[in-house]
Length: 274
Ligand code: ARG
Image 1: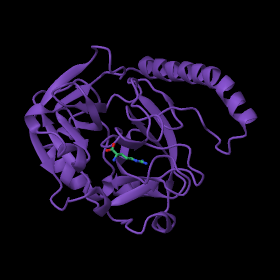
Image 2 (image 1 turned 90 degrees about the horizontal axis):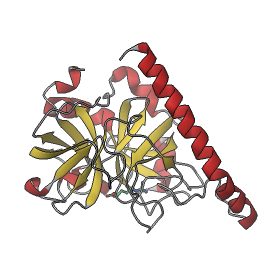
Image 3 (image 1 turned 120 degrees about the vertical axis):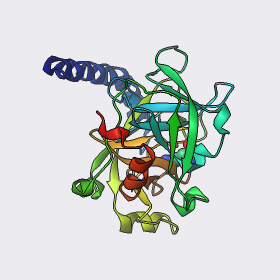
C-alpha cells in the first residue's frame, strides 16, 4: 500500500472517531443523569460504535439462502474464511453465502461468494467444550486484505489487559435486534484464572476471554464467527458467553493461536500470498 494511502486511512479513522464522540455525547449525558452504573451504555454492538469496513477489510458475514445474516467470519486468505464451528454447521454448504466488503447489510457493495468446502475442527461438538473453529473455502479469490494469524512471537497478545477489538453485525443489546451496520468495540483480554472463575467450563487451551469486569461491552448473538483482533492479527473468534455484556460474564472466543496451523493448512497457504 502506498504511504499516502495509509495516512488517508488514519485520517478517515480519526474523522469517524470524532463523529462517534459527537454522536455519543448526548447519550452519555443522559446515562449520567439516569444513574446507570455502566460506563458505556449506548445500545450498540453492546457498547461499541459503528465501524468502517475499510478499517476491517477482512470482516465478513454469513447469510443463509434467504439473505438472513446469522454469523460473522474473517478472511484469512484470498478465498478462505475462518469462522466458528457452530456457525459453519448451522446452515448447509449449498445455502451458505459469504458477504465481503459490505458495511451496511442493506447495501449492495462488496462481493457475495458461495462456499465450496467446509472444514470443521475435528474435536468440535459444542462451543462450551472448545474447538469452535471452522474454515470455509470460497468459490473465488477476494480482493480484500486478509487478517494475519498469530505466530509464536504474538504470544503476548494474549496477556491480561491487552486491548483487543471485536467487530460484527450482531445484536446491539442482550436479547435485542441485530445491527444493520458493522460495529466494533474494544475489549481487554481477560486472564485464564479470572475467566475460570467466571465459567467452570473455561478451557485455556481452546478459549480466550475478553471484556470488562462490570460488563457493558461485548459481542452478542450474530457476532459469532467474527474476529477479535489486535492490530490486524486475529487472536480470537467469537464463540459464546452467558448473555451479552453482563458483569462477571465476559465474551468467550476460540483461541486462534491454538488453531493457527490448522487454519493455515486449510487455507492452503493462501494467507502467505499478500
Ligand atoms: N453464540 C453467539 C452467536 O452465535 C455469540 C455469543 C457471544 N456472546 C458473548 N457474550 N460474547 O452469535
